[in-house]
Length: 290
Image 1: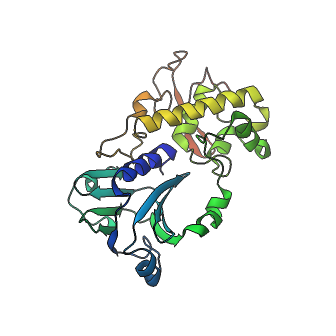
Image 2: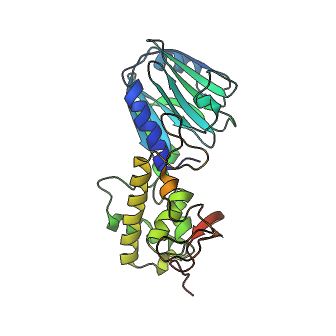
Image 3: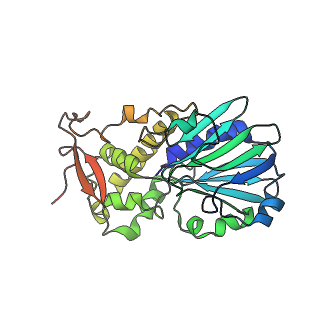
């Protein structure tokens, strides 16, 4: 599943290309991928103009001139591919990003009035595009539950620390992965930020000091910003606007680096299991407290 940097890469790519475009036609192959009322699509989707593209955690939102919003969840194998005078593709790295479209993985095709297209491809059919009133978006369960954006200007180290107050008996990795604590963080960037803060992922939240939380906050922001700059991770499923893999993993310190030397102390990186997830650590830099 994509993490914050991957989805932000999709958002910025689409923002460059489809703002101001008018939707002429929308076609879909299965209601599972496009679970919308036909009359709503006719009244609030077709003929409308795209006015803004937003991201909240791992969710994309395309705001329309009718005061409706298309909410998009790419899930595991989703892609968004734009074809016009310029091309853009982001998502699961298969040939659909560069091949002829629509193809067998295309679930939704949006045709714009200028003859360009936006394709939503999804091999496993777990992703979806939902149309709803923009005013209602903040009221859906996910939006009410999801935590703050870790890169928001208003989000401070003190606020970050406070978000973990009710998770004192939880491992720090499980708490980081909890979208109700902080938005958009997944396995890659949890491992990377915990290595940066020299915290063992299984450390109980209640045993972490305020000073350690401040360092963790700084490290999390660092790795997220670096990943966005590099176009997201090369974690099998996500690529950048040219259909090329992002380059963040080239700079990763521990994630998928088992057997390599720790860049800080030289010990061998190992892979363990924490919070039900494969987890990469330096056993020397990130010693577990007894």
